[in-house]
Length: 84
Image 1 (tube, rainbow, N blue to C red):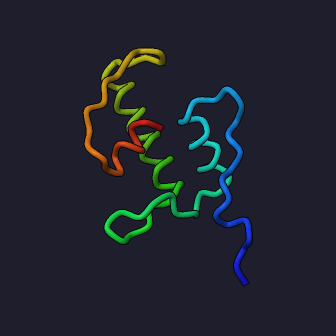
Image 2 (cartoon, rainbow, N blue to C red):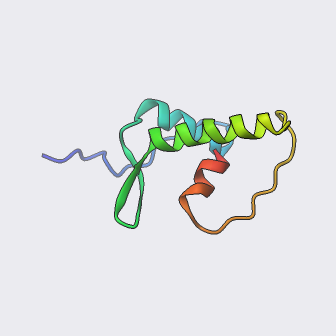
């Protein structure tokens, strides 16, 4: 039996940026696939972990909260990680 709400959009947190919405979803449903990349599922937990690793690397380079960081990337999984 399929879940009738499986494809329903989640309500977005009011006045929250996209990365906050993605992080909340990753924490509430980490094992769920966020997207498919060349037929392979990428879970919200994988995106969340990659985002934390990217943030740690930026911090190691001296980037602080609120500093602007430019992203020049194609349409790829790493963009989601970097945006989060």
